[in-house]
Length: 75
View: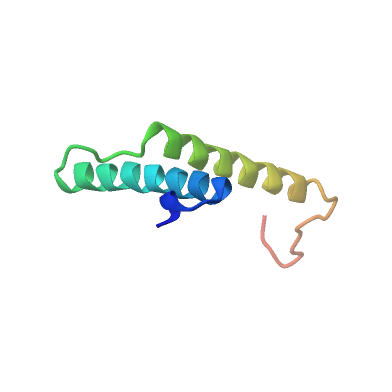
């Protein structure tokens, strides 16, 4: 329905979504057939970026100047 729309933006979004769904469907079929057990290159890049952002946030929070010290802790 969206591909037949008179609105160009609606058509572009619908076609982009259809392409993404097609890729995901093919990847799911490959996984189910045992042909693919790893992330696609694009998904791996996205996951890596999320991990880098998390690590960066951890470094920033560690530099806050606060010291995690428990006087009851034995050395």
